[in-house]
Image 1 (cartoon, rainbow, N blue to C red):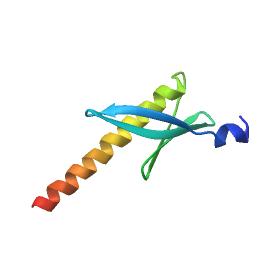
Image 2 (cartoon, rainbow, N blue to C red):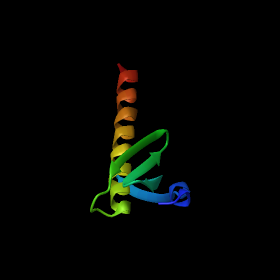
Image 3 (cartoon, rainbow, N blue to C red):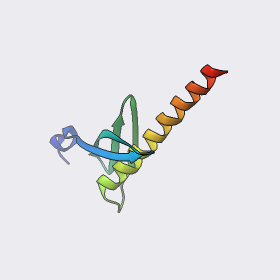
Image 4 (tube, one colour):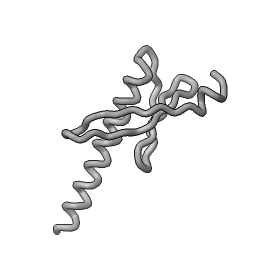
Length: 78
């Protein structure tokens, strides 16, 4: 892999709970690295397609963000 491969980021989109979310990802040394809002998550892609792993990671980040927002909303009502 060259430095140019590392510098290249691609857009990835997923639908979570009826809402579309967009993040960015790059591949580096067998890992897929996903960026969403202020979060970063990475995983080995192994035999799976890089884009597929990026969507899984983005879905997980979106669900975590939604849970945080719900928790903040709940704690404000108490």
